[in-house]
Image 1 (spheres, helix red, strand yellow):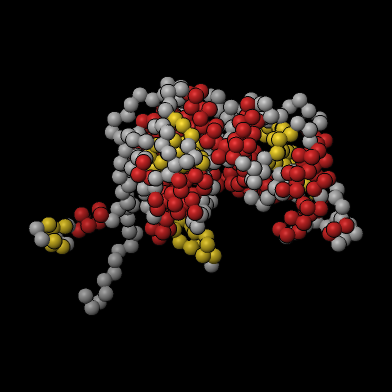
Image 2 (cartoon, rainbow, N blue to C red; image 1 turned 90 degrees about the vertical axis):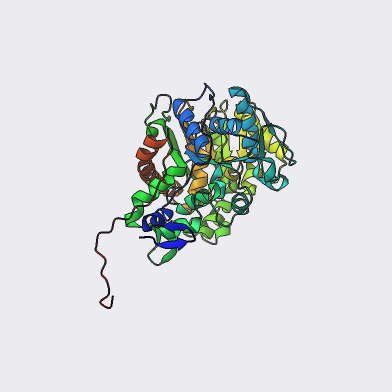
Length: 462
């Protein structure tokens, strides 16, 4: 029996229900050209899947070859491609393209299209016209994390191109808001629709969301229709040969500091964020001196020195010979030249903040780093460590965290957050592993099924 009559068109109830199912239709290519023979099998299959999808997210952990996959996507789609990345990563992408060969690519910071693939940094976004491109690729796309971010809103609202790709290391496992922003950018579903369909508020905290119990399976099936996640090749059923991470040694070194500015006769452990920040300011010279002492134990090796405060950066530059300091206020040319110089080994000691060089750079030639200052962001710490501790690194990576006694057990807090993050990441990968592994060579369209467990009770007046 028809549900409704729209002129000569009738709609059955089954057809009405089908309209309500979740469908993310593939909009990409049907015929895939020959891809770069230098790619690993898993890279080739992911790119093939993404080209067919047309709009997709590639969540591949550090060292899995996102740059090569991005280059292949940009090369083979119809029309021009714009690839947005952090400033220093843009130069690295150009260098990588030369190594792999066969790419018409150029950097642009003035809004002009200079090649098939135009590489630029986020800050130049307003200079480019979306109408000049058919494909957008966002590298290190965790920039979409914040719902109120200027970049997130601009990318989502203005760059609605036929081909949209978001590429990042594994997103925060417990940050479903980030997944919602990623889905909205590629056009899979609006963030608000995702929340209403799959989530409920977690208890009294309206800022936290929890997947509905009955929606767990359907949610991950839906995510897998537009995203692939891989932390190692075996996640998709491939061999892990050549993809075994070396040992990671994290050591906390505490120093005594002057208590005069704290108002106490003896060192008192900081409890609040404000107290920890003050403890760091009171111990800058002591922590920087300890960093120099550590470096002098292996003076011939490369060292990556991370800081959190400008005053730490200035003191480190003053006392560490043969060091290059990169600050946020430095010009783009100095930032790019320093990043590439350290990557190539011509710079032995690089001093900077994770906010500047902690994303996307490949520093696997270096296996020693020191954190002279830490923020309270585990994500920043993790990303900074992964600049060296990544697939392709052949030596043990040594990470020294220099803190004041008054800061407390900073490393223990980091390790606690790391355990929580790894546990959630494993859960996320395990949820997606089976579906991604089975579907990556083809296209699956997901729909939400409803299987009622109780019969419907009709009111007595009907």
